[in-house]
Length: 294
Image 1 (cartoon, one colour):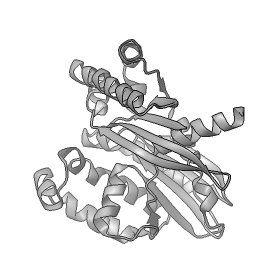
Image 2: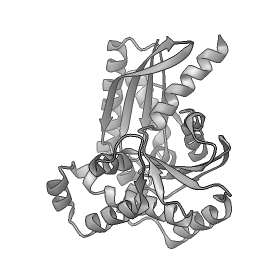
Image 3: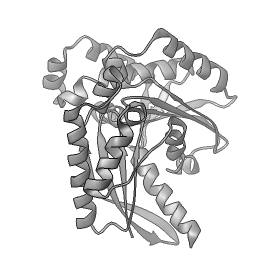
C-alpha cells in the first residue's frame, strides 16, 4: 500500500510518499519520496492577511506537481493539510477551491491543536523510556506546537502563534512570548527528569550540522552556542559558511531562539531529534484509520 501526505506550512509545502509493508505483523513505513517547495506563504499572510497573486500561483502549480507525482507512484491514499498561514489567510478557502479544480487535491485546514495531535500519530511515546517525561517541540513558520508526554501518554498540548516566519517579520510580541512562558511554567511540570524531542526542518539541520550521532541528544548549551554564532552573521555569511539555502539561513536563527526559550523555561537541558514531522504523522493517521476500518 502506498500512502502520501501533503503538509502545507507557513514556510514550505511538503509531499511525503511512503510504502507500507507488513513485517512480523507490524507496519513498516518505507520512504519513497520527499519533495519540499519553499512557498513561504507566511511572508504574505502575516503581513497582508492574505496570500498574494504570485504565491497563490505557486500553491496551485505545486499541487499540480504533487498530484502528478502521486499518480506516477500509484498512491492509494493521501491526505493534504494546511496549517498556520492558510488558516489566517482571508483568501485561503478560495485558493483551496482552485487547487481542487486544477489538481483534484482536497486540502483541509487544520487547527494548531490538530497539528499537535498529528505528532502523536508518529507513536513517539511508544519507544520512550518511562523513567523520563518528554516535551515534543515542533517549530514551524507560523506556529510552535508543544506536546507533553508523561508515563507514555499525552497529558498536554498547545499551539502558539510563534513561528520563524512571524519572527522574521517582527510579528511576535512580548505578550506572545509571555503567554508561552506562563503556559510552560504552569503545565510542563514533572517529578521525572524532562527531555525534549524536536521536529521541523530547522532543528533537523542544526542536528546534522552538529555531527551528533543518530539517537543521541544535543544539549541546550550547544543550541545556545549555535544561536549566538548565527545571530552575529548576516544571512549571506550563514549561507557561505554553512552551505545553507537562503530560505534556511534566514529562519534558522529564529527557530533556535524558540527552542532555546522553550527548553530554558521548562528546565530541559537535552533534546533528541528523531526526524519526524507533521507529514509523518499524517501518514500514520491515514494508515491507522484504514486499519481500524478493516
